[in-house]
Image (cartoon, rainbow, N blue to C red):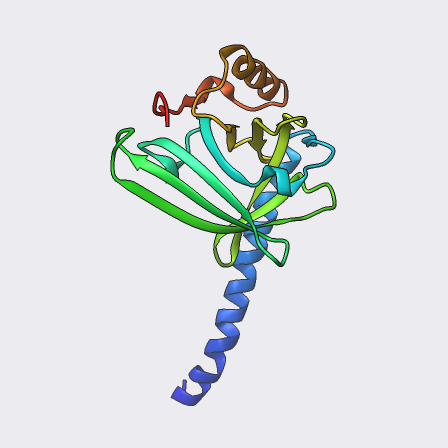
Length: 190
C-alpha cells in the first residue's frame, strides 16, 4: 500500500477506533446503571450553604484514596456557577505527606443534588447528594448510581456515632455495600 494512502486512512482508522471505544464505554456504563433501581437524591441543595470544608468520615474503598487519612474536601462556588473542588489526603498517617487533587464540578439539574465532577478532561464522575442535614448542612451522604462510590462527610472531623450509624443504615437500604466502608482517621481536634 502506498505511503500516501496509509497516511490518509490513519485519521479515519483512529476516528473509527475512538468511536468504537467510546460506544463500548457508554454501553458498559448504561448496563451497570440498569443493574440498580433508581437512586433518590435530596430534593434541593443550596450550593452557597454546601460550600466550604468537609471532613471525610467514611468511604467505600477507591484506588485514588488508597492509604489516605485525614481526608478533606473543600468546595468553592465560582462566578460561572461551577464548583472548585480541592481534595486533600494525608498519606499513610494523620500527619503524613499531603496530596491534593483539584477538580471542577457542575450541577446537572435544577435541584443541585446531582453533580458531575471532572478531575481531568474528558472524564466526569457522578457526585449525588443522597442525604443532607438541610438545616445546618453539617453532614452529607454522597454516592453515585452504580453504588461503587460512597462517602459520609461532616463539617467536623468526627460525626456522632448514632448519626453515622443512621447514614450507614440509609446507604445499606439504597443498595450500597456498606460492609466494605472504611472509616477515615481524622485528628482529635483542629
